[in-house]
Structure formats: C-alpha cells, structure tokens
Image (cartoon, rainbow, N blue to C red):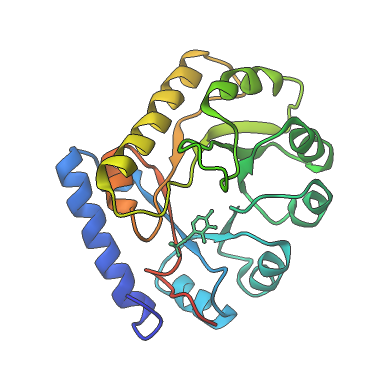
Length: 229
Ligand SMILES: *Cc1c(COP(=O)(O)O)cnc(C)c1O
C-alpha cells in the first residue's frame, strides 16, 4: 500500500476494506465517499486516481490545490482539508466544493464574504483534546453553530476530526463515537443552514474503524496514492 503499487490496486484493497467495515456495521457502502488526499504526490499520480474513477480530492495547502486543480479541474470535486488562513480564503474559494476545517468565526466571515454561492463546510473538532490538533473543543461546537446563522454562504454539512496517531483501537473508536454523538446534537438543533448529515473522519490508518463508527467521508492519502512525490 504505497507508491510502488498502482492506485488501482490500492483502490481495490480500500474498497474491499470498506465493504468489510460496512458489513460489520450493517451500513451501505454507497454512504462512504473516498477523498483522495493528494498533498504528498505528483499531478500525475492524482491523474491516475482520477482515471480510476476517484471523484473527490483533498489538498491542505493553496499551492497544492492550485497545481492539482489546474490539471484535474473538469471532473474532480475538491476538498480543502488543512487549517485555513483567513487571507488564503480568496485564493481557494472558487476552486473548492468543501472546506473541512472551519474552526473560527473570523474564517466563517471571510468565507461568507468571498463566496459567490453557499460553500459546504465541516466544523473541525479537536475531539481527542491533543494540544497539537486544530479544531474547536467539543463543548464549543453548539454555540459556534448558532453563531454561523448570519453567514448565509456557509452550509454546515457536517463535522470533521483527526484522531490521534495511535494503534489503540479503543481510543480511536471513542474519538469517532464522540464526534458522531456531537453530530446528533447539532442535527437536533434543526437549523436550516446546518443539516450536519456528514462525518469526515478516518485516514489511511484508521478508516475502517471510522466507517464502523459512522464516517461518510474518509480522507485517504498514503494508502491510496502514496506519500512521496
Ligand atoms: C494528510 C491528511 C490526510 C491523509 O493522511 P493519510 O494518513 O496519508 O491517509 C487526511 N486528513 C488530513 C486533514 C490530512 O492533513
């Protein structure tokens, strides 16, 4: 599962794993969208993924997004998955369909101001409480959602988290479960701008657990396209 394998081979393995996790959790595999995270790899490798039928692509920097976008723009759906500086919003806003890293009101304000149509956003939540991680604390999320109401160019489609880098399955499971529970709270607020139907969680190392716990978008880099240019 690395860059010596074809994307097609990796994709086949991942799809098999998705099937398996869905079977365990009694879910429909069609609910799971794979976001190919291309931040480590070349345009060519990203194009290989596109030719294998991958539709969703994720980048975490405006330069990377620009480079890949120039070459894959017609067919790809773009996700911005990295922490987003307010001053970078205008560079990316017309290229992305989803932003996974909404974590402060000043950013919401800027997205609202620069967007010419509603943008699908995820609130990034620091579910594990690790200091190194971006995102709102779980207890801050409901208030933040209410504060989004003036920003009509923001559609809150879901919550996103990055789990700790660990092999401790129970810890991972707890993180994903906590995000799902929080999603339930936001959904029950029943706000028209915050349907919050999606959960962006799970990466190369933990996506099967994330799927078992309710992920709808999994963000996969190294296991799908590899991790070296
Ligand atoms: C890099 C990155 C990923 C993908 O990581 P892999 O472990 O290579 O699958 C997913 N989400 C975010 C936010 C990332 O920055």
